[in-house]
Length: 141
Image 1 (spheres, helix red, strand yellow):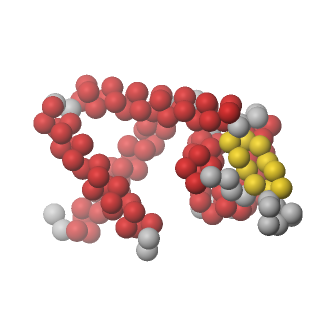
Image 2 (tube, rainbow, N blue to C red; image 1 turned 120 degrees about the vertical axis):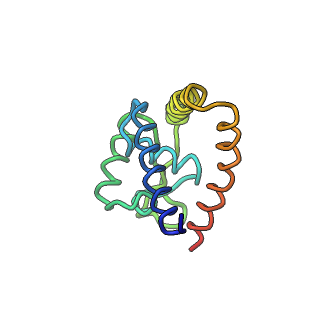
């Protein structure tokens, strides 16, 4: 298999896996994504959220507004630019995100256990660092 074919197969398969695992979510994908970005990267503005998600500012603002209304994030004045707000996770937001992550991991973990034999699980475990390294390489481009 040549590199281009491998790349396309990998893209399709990982995309299908991600979409399938998201089916276990109880919260809208946009909201879960915003909570995840803030959790991983720290406080950010709505513009930062839009850039991370690759969506319009209006789309990000809608998700942020819903998270604020649910008490999952809080906003405070940006320390260097008073026109902007910095979004922070609330304890409720952290808990909800942890719950979503546990649900996803549990669902995927059960599928791995049911569908793969021990050798296949070992192969999958060996592939995870390679996928992480590939992801980091792509992010640095």
